[in-house]
Amino acid sequence: MVTRRPSYLDIVDDIRGRIISGDLAPGATLPTCREMCQTYQVSRQTIGSAMIVLRTQGLVVGQQGRAVYVTAVPDRRLPTQAAGNDQT
Image (tube, rainbow, N blue to C red; front, side, top):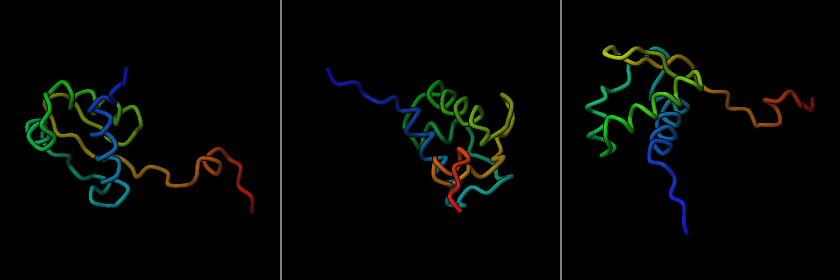
């Protein structure tokens, strides 16, 4: 049996990628839930799940019924460097 990856993780990856690329800069407003539902062709629940992950990762901040904003650019260093294993 093949396990399919949840679609909300694809949305998380897309938005994170847009933040890393600078397409969504810190302070930028994310599209509305309705707009994202249309863009990604998913339900509001799926968008909500993606937003929970992005909030947990510290990439966005917002409250229900209000805009969601980009808070930071994720650390782009390699995992070994991020863990404090710099070899300089």
